Length: 361
Ligand code: COA
Image (cartoon, rainbow, N blue to C red):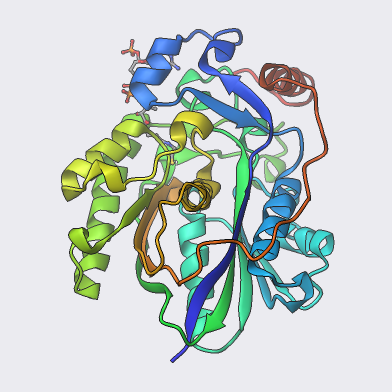
């Protein structure tokens, strides 16, 4: 029997911070409102592209696994902020890493992307189609935000994380999962011009998130709770058997409502959204990496992950950690330095929108 063991992990958070107080300089909001309604205190803003964040996270994950990039069979790049659509950003990452033997694809299931990618790639390893893979989540959502939309712009941050999966005969890795998408909820969270619509209709681009926070909130809690319950039932496990819960980091109130619905012990839940906000598809692997670094992942631990995102997509999965919790090696790679603050980067992004994009909403 083959398993898809996690043998390497690495994350990359850009250095520039944007606090709630900083955001008050560019929109009508308050520190208290953001903290109370979301649990977010600060977030990171990237000065580089998604592939650059992914590159650093991936080098760290490969060093942690003690695996050379050219031995990787597949790169699954989950993102909603691809540097380029054609060719895909996974192939850009391939070049940066020298992963010459890898098949490359991008996957967009919004914030659920990592859950989808991890499950699909794990199944390919378990069936023997491939022997190793890099599963990456990377986002630079700050460049997509319309800073006139205070209900959405405050929620997101930038960052990346990567896991190395390798075939193993030791029982570990992904063992149960469920993925889905609620039909007819597409308009609850959408960026209509972030595709061919505007171009095909010969309109100027207006990259703005249409966002119905309350509706997304309710759907998110229900679907994540249902998905978690189903994967637990199918594995014959109870929530008491789960050592760690890594939920998507969208809003502290969503996580609290989910925990209440599942009757989960808050001590088992990993939270990073206070410092990194919602990094979309990267949020779960970033939180997992942090939990490992903090010694919260024990050998043989059972870990439950769950997410939701635009679509509305949703998913949950259960995995069993292997024996090793220490990295085999470390990479010295770092992002190029910047002395810009998060606020300076955001002000630049706002100026760029005004100059380049039609922005009258
Ligand atoms: N600062 C101050 N006030 C704000 C604000 C901001 N940044 N954003 C919205 N408000 C105001 C609204 O205008 C509204 O005012 P009104 O009552 O006078 O109309 C009030 O706050 C309440 O807005 P509402 O949208 O009902 O708040 P909420 O409690 O639902 O919280 C979200 C809003 C977005 C934080 C919450 O709904 C949420 O987290 N939703 C899901 C998150 C999500 O979808 N994430 C992305 C997908 S993964």
